[in-house]
Amino acid sequence: MAVIDRVLIGEGLVVEDRPDGSGLDLLNVAHIDLLMGPRGSAAEDAFCRTLTDQKEGVNGLLAIIAPNMMVKPNTVMFNKVTIRNGRQAVQMFGPAQRGVAMAVMDCVADGTIPVEEADDIFICVGVFIDHRADMDDRIQDWNYEATKIAIKSAVRREPKAAELLKIYKDSSHPFAATSKEERNRRKADVAINEMKMRNPLIAKDAPKDGSEKAIEEMKDRKTLV
Image (cartoon, rainbow, N blue to C red):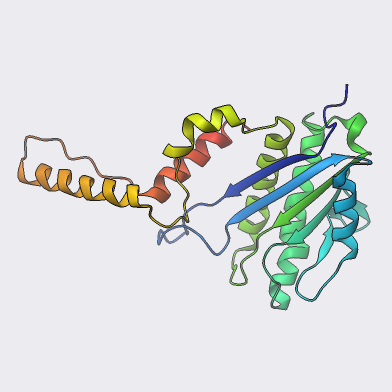
């Protein structure tokens, strides 16, 4: 029985702090939206439309390992941010393309995508590259990692709805606006910390903000990939 027998959806985000420690590296963050499926499925239709429907600032390109060496399964990339300049275009056609392509082939090599199915599968990969991105090595490495996360999640049919119901309210998004509940929790944390400062007998724990919690959650999930 085929492992990839229907349209599958995957997502992956990878981000770390800036090298100078100034906070999250939002300039080079990698976020992948991915769909894949067998020949004859809607994934094949989406692949063909993405590759042929070229517009100014929005382009579809094949994922290649090197010139004249496209990956299998057939993989098309599309940008989720309008390409504004030549540098951003080269980043899409260079480090991002290499990272995505290597992730696809490594997923075939490690058996996530069965090699006997690889010639008849189509993958569409949405890539985020900020027009201010300034570190090509991070673009390549992080898009590689995010693509692998997305493919493996898709093939495993994860996350499951039943599991999400248990954890979604306690999850954190590194770029989300602060919710009312979070604001109330932070007010409570501030009050508790103030009490700790006034009372030296109470242990003082440094609070973690939402982005730190989200990064820890992503690292925990990556250890499962």
